[in-house]
Length: 113
Image (cartoon, rainbow, N blue to C red; front, side):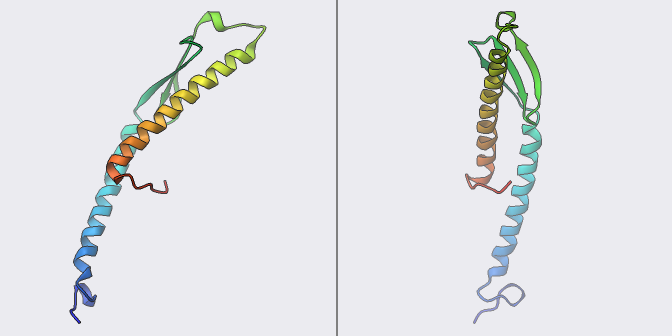
């Protein structure tokens, strides 16, 4: 039987070294992408643009614009619903952007983080 790296049969050691190097590069690329994605700003709107919310890649709200026409003291639930809808829209877009960016690095393999 042929001896490979450190006595491993079949010469698997060289391939293992390459796999480790690729995994380490992928980890660095993912960390860089995650840092970059924290700087992303995504807008979400609701009520035909009467509520506009800017969401950061860190899932924090960085801006909120509300048209005075949707501020109804008799119906605060409507305003609440519009804000939630704008946030959800921005959040869904942010997840799409995140997935797209990370898929380019991982080749579409879903990672557990």
